[in-house]
Image 1 (cartoon, rainbow, N blue to C red):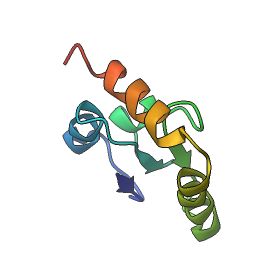
Image 2: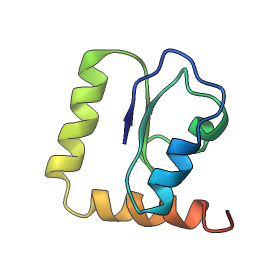
Image 3: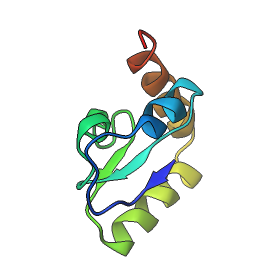
Length: 81
């Protein structure tokens, strides 16, 4: 899930994406559910700079197992929902 919003307080889309095992990339302007994205641990929380987003996408494309591990951690984070 790419969520490059300038500002957002709460968005169920992030929880839905995680529940399905998707990885999330959110901007630093996304509060609420976006704060659960620990940069590099269970997704990416990034500044609204093009290169930061390109770098995050490239990490998912090139680092073996990163998509799976972030997807699993994100899914576990919303399991109680």
